[in-house]
Image (tube, chains in turn orange, red):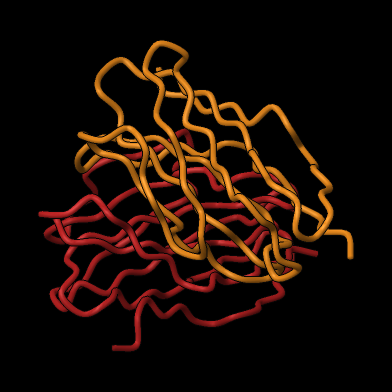
Length: 112
Length: 112
């Protein structure tokens, strides 16, 4: 069965510091992996996606993620966090035209 | 391009009532999925429509039903509302030929 685990419910980082959000997945086939961001009361915006090829993918807003098949992980990173990055981040797994399964999310707080 | 649009944005209903939520997909998209996002949780897949038929369904009771129209727009209907149905309902659209889904801003349903 498909599942996604985001181990960190809430993370606080200082503005300018680096960020890593963890995501572990369980999927029977080659997964399609996604990271979405959600600001309060808003829908989801796609940050980046991995389907195949280079395991380090670049996304919008300076985010990147690395797919590690051996660890079943797809962690999101950003070298320097901005106050505007404060939001809820969701990792999701899917394949082809199947539905996506989302993790419970990680809430990011940015300290000035 | 208006993107994915959902209506209404907010809705308050009484327990036992019925509700209909609407979604217009992004231009060029033919597949619509619905998700329920309870407070503090990740989105949960309800169902997906393509070619006016329900193609996949998540673990939701029959009180949740949907429809897709020839112009690809979609409705989500929930009967016999329960307090636990209070959530943000998200619509996502995509092209059948592509795996990237775009989300609307959601409809916030409150059941009292």
